[in-house]
Structure formats: C-alpha cells, structure tokens
Length: 562
Image (cartoon, rainbow, N blue to C red; front, side, top):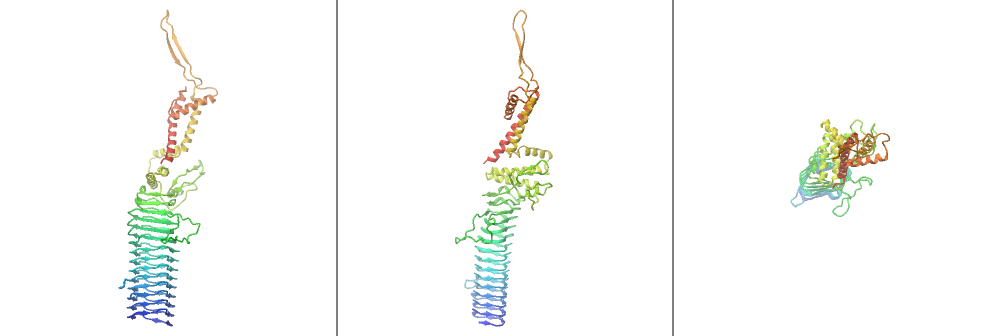
C-alpha cells in the first residue's frame, strides 16, 4: 500500500481493526485526533514525510509499529495508548515527540510500551508521558538527545543495553516500579535531577562518559547504584532507606546529601559483572584513565551512617560535615599530603614532614602571603578556625577505627590549625609554637632526639668549660692535743671545688662531663665534684633533657601504637 501524496486521517474514527502493514507514506501522514477503536498495525510501514499522531487515541489491545521507519518528524504528543504499544526495531530518523503521551493498561491486560531495538536518529521527547504498564526501551539507540522530563513510569522501566549517543534527561520523572539500566551506555550526560525512585532496588550497572546527575533525587527504598562514570553529582539527594553506591572512574560530589540509614560509597576494583555473567563494557574510558573513585565534597552531610571504602579523598572538602567523628573509612582511603622536601623561602629554610593533610589546608596555606611551593590553591576558603574541628573529628574517627598512626596525623593538623588560629591568646600560641618546635606536638621523634642531642652536647661543653673542678678537692683533718694528754678531737673538712684553669677540654674532663650529662638524662646524680656553675648546669640538664627524651618516646609510641 503506497500513499503517493498527502494522507490525511485527522479526527477519523476506525471502528474496527486497521492494517497499514508495509504501507509507504511518501508525503505527510496525518492521524491527528484520530480514534482507533480496534487493533492497528503499522508494522514495517515507511513514513517518508511527517507522521502526525498528536492527540490520537488507540483504544484496541494492540498498536503495533514494529520495524516501522519514520524518515521525518514523528509526532505522538498527547497520544493515548490504552493497550499494548509496540515500537520494536522502529527507526526514527528525525525528531520523535511523545510529550504528554499516555500508555494505559488495556482491558486485555496489556498497557506496555515497547521500543526494543528502536533507533532514534534525532531528538526523542517523552516529556510528561505516562507509562501505566511496562515500558521497554531495551537495546534502543538514541542518536540524539533523549528527553523523559516529568515522565511517569507506573511499572517496570527497562533500558537494558540502551545506547544514548547524546544526553538523556529524566528530570522530574517518577519511577514507581523497578528500573533496568543494566549495560546501558550514555556518551553524554545522564540527568536524573529531582527524579523520584519509589521502589527501584537498583540503578545500573551503566556506563556514562559524562556526568550522572542525581541532585535532588529521592530514593524510597533500599537501592544499589552502579556506575562507571566520569562524574557523579548527588547534591541534596535523599535516601529513605539503606543504599550502596559502587563506582568506577568517578569524581563524586556528595554535598548536602540526606540519608538516615547506612549508606556506602565504594570503589569497584574490577569491571561490573552483569546478571548474565558478562562484564560491563568500558569502551567509553581510555585505557590510561584511572578507574579509581575521587570524592569532591562532603559538605553539609550528616556522616553518622556513612561508610567510604577505597576512595581518593585528596581533594575532598570536609568543612561543614556533621558527625564527622562517626564516619567509617574502610580499605585504602587516601588523603592529601604536605609538600615534600625543603623549601628555601628566605631564611630559615622551610621543611614539611610527611603527614595526611586536608585539601582545605592546602587551599588555605596556598592563599597566604609568601606561601611555599607545593601547597595547591583551590576553591575551599576555610581557615584554621574551621579546620581545627574537622581535624579533631577525623582524629576521633581514626582512633575509633584503631588506626592510631593515622589519628596522629590528624592530631598534628589540629594542633597546627590551633597554632595559626586568631582566637587563642598569644601566650597559648607561644606555648604551642614551642611544643611544635621541640617535638612536633609529641609526634616527631627525630626532632625531639635532635634537640636532646643538642642539649647534651651543650651540657658537655659547658661542664668542661665551667662546671668541672680543676682537681678533686682534698680532705683535711685538724685537731688539738690537750696538754697533759687526754682525748684528741679532729675536724675533717673538704676544700671547695676550684674553677678550672689552663686546658679545660681534655679527654679526661670530657669523660667526666659525659658521665654527668648521661646521668642527668635519666634524673640521676653523677656524684662528680662540680663548681657552683656546674651545679646549676647539672640542675638545668636534669630538668630539660628527660623531658626531651620523654617527648621522643611519646612520638615513637604514637607511631607504633595499635
């Protein structure tokens, strides 16, 4: 059947079945407002001009457009399908508009919309469309953008192995049943902004070369999300039950997300495995691209029920996170580090010891005048006042997880922020500075040992120069013999130590000074004869050197404690 010119059936009523199998419409085909009371077949039909079905009503059990070809515009806006709508292997070479279309459940129990293996070569719009039965787009190909804005899926929504060459938009859509996006591929962005998933138990695994946007989305039940994606945005996303998010290649923005039950974000080490045992294809990602997962922000999140596993947290913004001390970090969660090596910024040179550092400390230090090379400027604008509580909370989280060495790094960061904060008295800041200089807040054993060695060397030099007596004082005995005999009384006295003269730096004097110094480290008296100056030198040594030794032992303990 061939229609050479225009074919107008606007507002027509087909009382019985209508068959247009293999029909060819060389001009525009108009079925606007038409009513099909029975079944209708357009299988293998070819529409070379516009195919206009706006406001048409398909009341029969079946409306079949299998293998149909739409070479020009296909308009199904405000169309109503009361039975089964089949578009399997149909080809849409131009725009396909299903805005405000309704797929209802028919009296024979159909009501499904099937677009399996259909090809949309241009824009496809299903805005405000209602699918009251099963909606299947399995293996469909959308070569242009695909829009499902404010669409409603009352039953299963199937996009198994669907291919989206452009962007796909499900913004403000509602999925009341389950969703199948297994092995779906999107070369643009996938927008699920403000979408509602009332009963979906999984979303994915799917691959997206751009972004998956779940900002403002609501999940009503337990769900597992599986994405291989460049960026996942979950700003103000809401989970009403437990959830697990498994990712590859992704950078995650989780700012202000809301969840009251345990939620896990984990990096998937290997490609996702589909239900049939095949691996999810990752052709969208070059081989050199890092499959790891990077967290960009946790600001505004209540982390009491949050678990992070094997994530890169080097650029994560933590300021504003609530209950951060209760967060659980599993596996290899990596943080940023301080700049390595020595930096010659005037005098004296600056050297940063290796430790875990928050990205926001990088941003703050890089923004300071005279910042050394290695600190990275970023978007975070938090200062010491805001960062000290963050370090404190992470320290407690690591301590609760029995990771004491990691907790020590965050204690160091907390003390650094306190030392640079503007709200503490100058005297306390001076005390913190001394604590930092002497032992790195009790965490740098090498620094404490260096000061201990310096103090011991100085003590030895001072004792050799001023503290040791010239010679060992001799004892003298004096007495009086009474005339005519009787009891003799003797008085034994000891000469005062004499200040040294001549060559004071001899090996013998060094040995004596070393003995005094070593005994001072462990709070013992050497028993050596000292001058007055030497006595005060020993007292000072016995006060300072054991403290430095204790700081070194404390630092070692903090690094090996479990």
